[in-house]
Length: 245
Ligand code: SF4
Ligand code: SF4
Image (cartoon, helix red, strand yellow):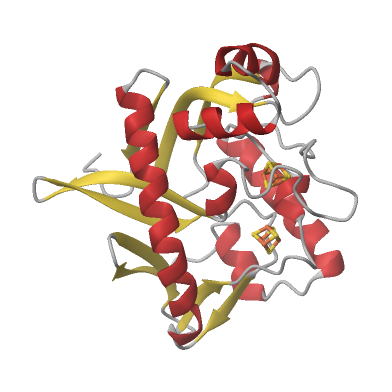
């Protein structure tokens, strides 16, 4: 997704969200990169370092909670579903395949996707991805569409065996070498599709969310690492915000 496409996609997505949900003005501005007073607040919860945006002028944190079952917007606008090796084994069995290789041929595609929805962190992922719609091919990668596993009532027919990446949204995560050791980091993806963002003067209300997600995010990153190591995919991160470019 190019920067220009992303910006116009996010703006349109926010306008759609506003028809049903009340998107607070600071949340809107932050999504569109219109704030120049954003400070990164770093919070370590268990084995994950979370990066929470803080708006200095308003003294507000950007926080999040999931509104499901009232909302299933992320599944309506799913951009891609990269699979770890654990996902491949679990989902192929759920879909009734005897051999995971047949599942990869029939119900998955191998594609490369660049994601720059995290403000300065560019992620490139080449992986086996679950087809989100019939006849999906690589040219659809990164283009949001309604996931075929979403039911009319808003539930996921793969749940609880859905892809690991579905358990993470709207967090994005990556591994960075800190002081010579690998460390898992996570921040919000600001795609404009999630109405769960809100602002607060305190971090109190998100503490339980971070506690629960820290385990999911850590396990997902370990699974991703195993997947890359065993040759089922590759992921790279370029941190343009903190690099001396
Ligand atoms: S779009 Fe956001 S609030 Fe809605 S179900 Fe997905 S994560 Fe939850
Ligand atoms: S697999 Fe399930 S949770 Fe994931 S996008 Fe599709 S419907 Fe949503």
